Length: 110
Image (cartoon, rainbow, N blue to C red):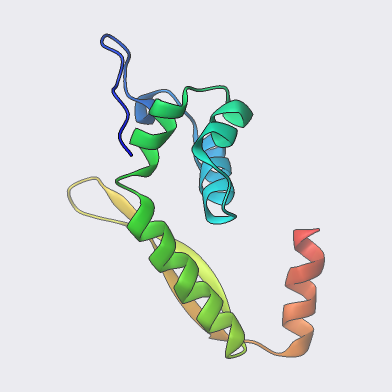
């Protein structure tokens, strides 16, 4: 499935903030269709498709890593690492978790 991008519109990457990107990621990983994601964030389906396409593999890989680590009883914390070039990326850190710590994190997420 491909979408044609409208001429003259800037890419979605330059128009959204981190909270909207997190919403798009959460909805995509939950299995929501592109049209529904577009309605929630107020963008065209084509723009959402072009935003998700280059990020899809990384999101799925990170989600799979977190799911497997949680199943083994570890707590996954994401840390922002900065590069000398000025860029940055998020990397997971796994910590052994006790039941009390997992319950506290679950309570904090509510």
